[in-house]
Structures are given as structure tokens and as C-alpha cells.
Image 1: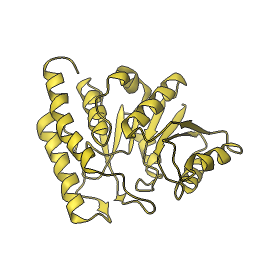
Image 2: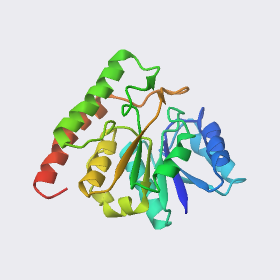
Image 3: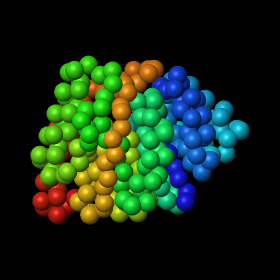
Length: 237
């Protein structure tokens, strides 16, 4: 099966070379797509340099900092157009352990979506301040209550999906962008009846660079949950 790992980037020059190297050596069938939002620190240039020697690396360069959700949408469209069977999504900062992909590969044989979950077996987060942990865990509970989804970590960004899931979702009708994008994709897949599996991961806060979290992202997530529920009720999801 054709497998693609999608990694959005903005100013990840400190991490991207090491991450790509780990992924390339992890499984010789994995291909990698970097979706770079015109990083001023030269992230794209590092990727393009590696592409000269490694044919399994691809890049989409965008005009500016256009957001996480739209980056994934472009990556998903690339995956559909190029007929990848299994699509992974992950952060570029090593907060997601690449080796978990091997476990996801096993689970995706039985499920349509596999989520690397911080909260499915307790709380497995390293190096977060208590305020951010409370915010994240509280948001997860909030989403579960409003949407009715059973997913323990609906905002998690480490996932594996079958192409059929992406093909079933109108990617041009995605309303969210930041961390709420993860909620929307999960909710739409769940609403369509796809089988979703959560596996426990340990989330380690980024080892280099700065966090992309902002108040705007949090406020968007709060509003998007209600919008999605309304669209579900009115049959417009």
C-alpha cells in the first residue's frame, strides 16, 4: 500500500532534517509530504536539499502563514490525487514519537481512523505547564459533551486515516483551521460511521522552536464545536 506522512511546517528548521531522517529510516515504504507556509528560517530549503538524494520526500510550498487546517487540506488533496492508501498526519517538532506510526500501521488494518491519544489511558503529557494541560484536557471533555463523540482526545494531531475517509469528506467545506480542524475532521468521520480507534501515546512538548498555540485558536475551537453540532442537526454537515 502507498503510505504518506503529511507534516505542516512553519519555522521548523531546527527539527525537520532529523524528523525526516527518522521517518525515512523507520519504514522504506513511507513517503513524506512537507507543507511549508513560507518559513522565513529556511525550512523549505532544507527539505529541498534532502529531496535531491531521497525520492520519497515531497514538498508543497505556500505563499505565507495560511494556517494548520488549510495546510492539511492541501496535503489531503495531494494524497487523494496521488492515490495514497494510508495517510498519516503529525507535528514537525518531535512532540509526536515517529515510532508510533508502526503501531498505527497495525491498527489501520482493522479501523478507518487511528488517533494517537494523550488521554485514552490517563493523561500522558510531558513538559506542559499545568495551565495548558487543564485547558487541553478540559477542551477534550467539552467537545465530548457537546458533540456526543466518544473520542477522548479530539484535538490531537497525530493520526492515521484511510484514503476513503478523506474522499468522503468535502474538503472544500471545512470551516475551521487551528486545533479545531482536528475536531471537525474527527466529527465528520465519526458522523459518517467510520470506525475510529484511539491508541495511547506520550505527548512530549516540542524540543526546539516555539509553540503555535494562541488565544485565537482556542476561541475558534469553542465556537466551531457548536457550529458543527448545529450543522449535524440540520443535516448540513
